[in-house]
Image (tube, rainbow, N blue to C red; front, side):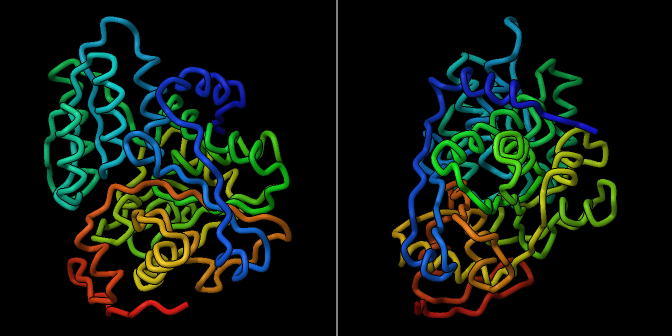
Length: 336
């Protein structure tokens, strides 16, 4: 069984101390009333790149040996942004590979950090293939968005902070994609607070880790457009670390619909005044949809990033219809 140790996560915390922020844990009065117990929001969207991915990317880049020619990765946006940011700080070339499903705002943000961007195919798997080709032909080092020990340990530092900020945390809702965040955070939390339940939450279309756990091994899924676009993509059929971590350490996995994500985006905006990505609010969506039975005691979720398409966000806040590929989400005006 793959494992990430508490020592690795504590080492990552020291390594990234000058790059990533220790983020606040903010109470949500509205969600607290809805949950019937304290509901807390871990504000990773205030990181310098606007997303938690800086933690893992910085830990991986800062652990590269001297003389490294450059780095590459595949990304749905935020990991690429983190790699680009960390690589620039080290003076390294960065080539970020993404599919055509990635929103333009995320592509523009990565280019603004000085990285090269390659748009390849219509899936994370297509982007991964291009990243691996660059490793073979251009001598750069590939940094996986989720299946890398340094990346996972970096994301795990969020778990350490959470338990320090809320020692009696009963339930943690973690956005679930390739499992780097969920696996790292669960490894940290279970090491220092074994009784805390850690629940992965994803969208109900194209949730690769959920399908893989159900199958008992990594599987491919069709990647489709989603309000939670950061949670898209596969986990890799040769996954070495994050699949085992999530299968072993997560207490449950919950799926939410696009309509439920739409509603949750409105909630965190109107009730908590937060502008964030759809991937951030899947935990809130699960609570609002009645899909959770939290243990008695404080509940927290991770607000993972703010790098979103503001035009779509504006449509949602105004209750307008949103089209996602072949799916149209019917608009709904917000009401508490």
